[in-house]
Image (cartoon, rainbow, N blue to C red):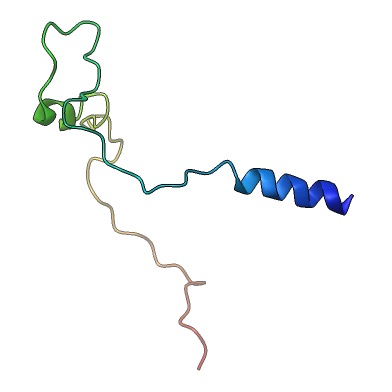
Length: 78
């Protein structure tokens, strides 16, 4: 049983990359969306879609209200 565990650990350790990571070449660009005629610029890609950050228009609280006193909201002892 110990041999199987040691063998599994050795095989797991051997599956990693040996060299340092390198950045992708600048000529590799992400694929363009299917409905786009030209590839989007980086600024267009970084801009959030309206679905990603919607405006909040359905807020049920229209104005802030004063809270009633809570008799159990006591300061810590000491």
